[in-house]
Image 1: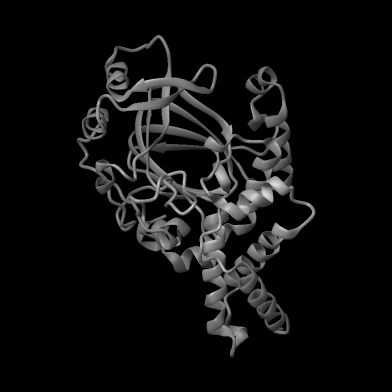
Image 2 (image 1 turned 180 degrees about the vertical axis):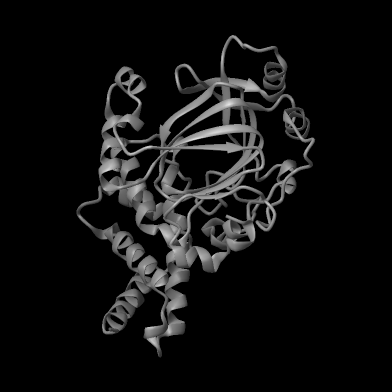
Length: 352
């Protein structure tokens, strides 16, 4: 597709259920560094002594710690390299490099984090009121890097731009059957998991991306990524109105799998409550003419209501209820928002 054709109206109309490939960035209103930008520049801006987590591709464990200076020397080393080290979790939205990169405009428009949180240097990152740092990642991958099948945390959607190099995606749609197979695969012993290519058990599609391509990946898509040549990628994650069902579905799967906090969307319920309160307030505009309320808005509010009201449900552990309550911002009007939503649901239920 062409970048200029992808705006908020298009996304609401199509529902953003399928992956979108934009071959050329013009019209996306995306900001990227100069074409000569490379690994050395990342180290220069963020600091050669900055320590980052890296993945040992052979074991698929994020158990390596390197400085950016060490990683640049590694990337400069002749091929074939002795080991394959992949950096995919370098988030830089609060760094000096942030001004060089902005996600596509449609992402910034949809993103709940961009809509409801301001940059606040006074809030520590662990505070539930701090802006989640998930919008801007720099991924630096040597040839032969491979990231096994996964779903991005919290069911977030993804923007992903190939700045240098190439990538091959193996994509599995998030049908109920495929999500069940994925969860079973995630529960299997490590040796069995690493020896089983999940794509052989599901409908799996191959997509090759080259330099200059951008993709927008919807919520819940299961994917693995192969790097056929040294690559530099910019990307990020975002929660939004059009994928509430899958965002909760994946978050609940992470609960069942007992996914460590470091691999989960930060302060997920804080963000959801901020969005819920805003979306309910938008329904006020349609109180006198409920037939005009857009379907995407009604669906988002209904799904948020049905899930968030479980805060008082017996199906949720007391520990989990406390965690969700602790994440609420001071101005969160829980009872008022739920009450108002019930009123709206009765009103809109009468519309044929």
